[in-house]
Each structure stands twice: as structure tokens, then as C-alpha cells.
Image (cartoon, each protein chain N blue to C red):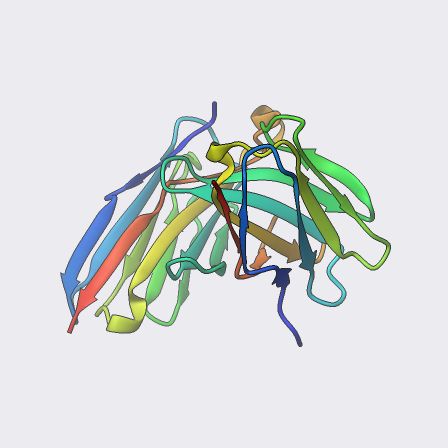
Length: 114
Length: 112
């Protein structure tokens, strides 16, 4: 089955520190999405990347998609307690995905200590 | 603009029973998709409906079914519940497809 590998599984940082979360696929992706989830709640859309080499930023969060469209990173600058939550990457596998057109990584749990 | 509404928020059922979950999308959104989230398997795509037709389907058994009404509201049904069906079920809506999804808060289903 198609899989997205996220790393690390969990991350604990001190407020003000920078951090990076990675998302890797063995196949070329048609679209890569980043979401944030508070425990037991729904997901909140952060960013969508579709082109190889694309980079997008929103406030202190920057996401990049590599040229081969198989790896993405999410970088948070000067982290704040409000950044805490679970970050998930999701990907549109396109026609190659078959029944698993949309897949998600297992998530990265971020804790930001004040 | 109201968000995606899912009802009920919590549900407790016993094995063998069936359950129906409801999802009201954001006004104007025509695509509704459903997901199952468990600690072990993570977030998994169940199916997507667009204009009352199932457009995409994940790798789940036929016990999981859904439908969409003309007002874009959607229901998901799980028959013959198993213990492993205990999960957070999330519904999401979007204008056209699986990009930029807006999620509801989910229905937490416990099967005893």
C-alpha cells in the first residue's frame, strides 16, 4: 500500500527554537498537503504544494516540496506554545494510488515548552 | 460562514450493531469525504462523494458505506460493528475535490 513516512514521530522543543518535520514518499506525489490537528479534533489546513521545488510560507511556517516531488519538509521558526499539536502530511497519489488516492502520514506530535 | 458539522460527537455501540454518522458541509462545498483515524493506523481515507455520487473509495470493507444528499449533506454507515471499528471518524468538505479540506470535529465511536 502507498505510505507516507513522517519524521520525527514526536518532538519537544523550547519556545523560541526552530524545528523541522519531514514527510517522505517512495513515489512521486501529485499534491502534498500539510495539516495541523489538536488532539481529538479535526484537521486544519496549513498549506498545499503541487510543483517540484515549490516553497510556501504562512506566518512562521514554511513548507517545501523537493524537485522530485517525493519529499516535503515543514519548518517552524521561533516556535510558540500555539504551534503545539499534531502535524500531518497528506498526499494525492493520483492514478497510481488506485483505491488509496489520498493517503496521510502517521503525524508528528509537537510539544512546545514555555 | 458555518464550518463542517458532524453529529453525534460521541457514540457508544456494541459489536454487531450498526451506526449512522452525519456530516453537514460548508455551504457551497460539493465534495464531502470521510476518514477513519486510529492510534495504530493513523488517518485513513474512506470515500469521497461529489454531487451525490461516490467518486473515490479507500480500501475498506463493504460494511462501510455512505451517501450524499442533494443539499450536499452526507451520511456514513457502518454495519455489523467490530471492536476494531472504534475510532475517530472525520468528515471533510471542499469546493471541488480532495485539495484544501475543511474538517469537522469528528465523531468518536466506541464499540464495546
